[in-house]
Length: 530
Image (cartoon, rainbow, N blue to C red):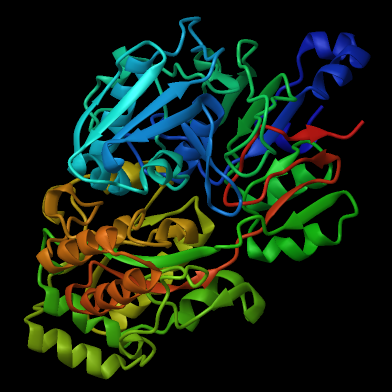
């Protein structure tokens, strides 16, 4: 069993399986084996914005609303809602049959506490919390929002799919501070996390939750609709070596590889038994995120000096090669698929003027301070962005301290606000789903709210004022106009630099069906053909 993976110690054939091969084969049909993009370092999808944790979250937890593949909110845990008091009072009613994995019923107070916790962490949630007078549970079946003013996007907030996940957990866990990780995984989703099988860096497992009651209505679409668990188990196998992952997929030892590397995709496409497809039409946007609390990037002029050195083509071709169908340049601060995307001030990028950037850095006062660049050795796309970034920074005269580590360590390290001399950092390269950079509701890299902002912690009163105005805009034209202003302000404050958009395929066995479109790996409604 599992020759390729066993050779490297990832899977072991049991004595029982060897003694009863027919039974083992039948059992294997009920197990989905998956290779995620990275190790699952943190379990709480409110504690971290790491996508691997978000994907884990959608196995274990459920949300009040789901989002369909057209990015519209659809009822999920709720049966419906009413809106009163000129849009300032919303009451949601939970549907019947909702049960947590510990056997307790899902109650209104669980949902209220969960949304409050999420709202302290998430950029869309923070906008909601800013207008909320009270979130409570009048009865066991209802959750009520009392607002200072109308917030028409409330259902959209509860449905959001980009990190952080607005997951519902028991009240006793939801009372945990949002900056502290919840490690006890008790959700009400279609699969139950098997903590006893957790082997960090190697193996994670989930078991079908018999008490889950899917919605009786709604077509499965992204995170919305009926969520059917067709496998008894879902197993995640951490396989850092791409060649090993590709071989395991080709011979059927695993069913699904979330992010095959660009160099191995042609090989997989030639296999009659493997499907390689792009399931996320919004793509991935590479960025450079700088620590605005520590030198040298606490100086906005130094951040601005780098704009003229950027050539998005260099970054994109390093990841996906020369096939222009797989990447885009001239990408601003919003996803190109979004109605908020615009070209305001985009000329500051693409000059690739290294000599000019070097002069601008000197004029801004850069004096050779070390630039600690965090780079994941086990995450190919982000690792490649980091390598190109390191080369660029060196060529404009910066003193680069390139620190390679695993992705789990990086996601912990980026939370540090300490100086670089005490374990802090200067910059890293997120690879953000296009859906996350769609508009100001979910764009966490465009916040300017200081120590409450996403890692990097920029402060910009102007960015925050424009964002607040966007929520109050009367129509699409008003929102688009404000997003042009936001993009222009981004080139002044430079909380981040967009490095281009690329499209990341996923790969799975041809016998696997039901893989949902929309944005990321989801495990409900997936089945194996007979």
